[in-house]
Amino acid sequence: MHTSELDLNLLIPLEALLEERHVSRAAARVQLTQSAMSRALARLRRALGDELLVRTANTYELTPRARIVKRELEYLMPRIHALGRPPFDAAAATDLVRLSCSDYVTLLYGEALFGAIFQEAPSLSLAMEALSPNTVADVEHGRVDTAFVPFRPAANLSWLRLLDEDFVCLLAADHPVRRVTLDDLATYPQAGAVFLAEEAMILERRLAELGVQPPSALRVPYFSAVAAALPGSRFIATLPRRLAVRYADDQRLRLAEAPAELNGFSYGLIWHPRLDQDPLHHWLRAKITLLTG
Image 1 (tube, one colour):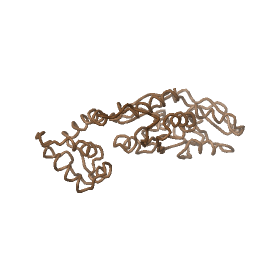
Image 2 (cartoon, one colour):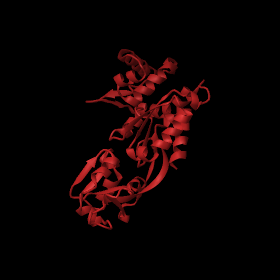
Image 3 (cartoon, helix red, strand yellow):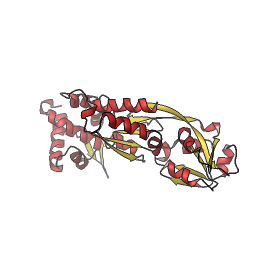
Image 4 (tube, helix red, strand yellow):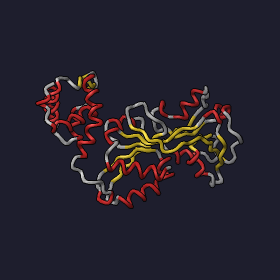
């Protein structure tokens, strides 16, 4: 390794290259031209004595050496970024924070959470986007800062449990089922919100483990759309309890306990380890924990 050639100015391009695994995307992320990023990659390869990124049929893959370097950077770069940074002042923060969540979060906590955040940090910008099958990858690659998810991912991401949830069923008031069983879930069509990759959707995975396959389903991207579809139907919606009880005052709907076999789950935050010590994100996570606990 020719460390004498490793200009510290190359660390930021190196971080972007290893996370994006793509020269053009890495260049756009750190506001370099593609040719400048290509030159930076060439210098990094000479300095580290390794190819770092190897082209495959459709993309680039990290070499074993690059994977080691990437893990080291995850802990090194936050400290470098923090050098010379003044103590965090929420009132003066003008950053853009990118959050990903379902409408479970915005419906239950949006008013209190956004109000508290902007009261202390009035010039902060929040960009909210819906959960998607790409959310975990987006967090890994820095396209999303923090995501609210109902599972702990296998990826090398930081995780903070916010709350424990269980399921309850929501039905039309005139639905013939009074106490929902697994047989009912296998007999009546289901209505559900689907926004993550199938392997991450807790309810679908648990039903499959129990051998329950509903005859048909309504799949929508928002929980609010599930509730809107229920009156006058024979759908059964199995929803997080905290969300479902919000519809208990709607006389067209009623709640029924879900089968105990479905168990509960934990809702939490995920973020990249490079943000573990970031003052803004540390403050934001503390605020979210306080308001959702």
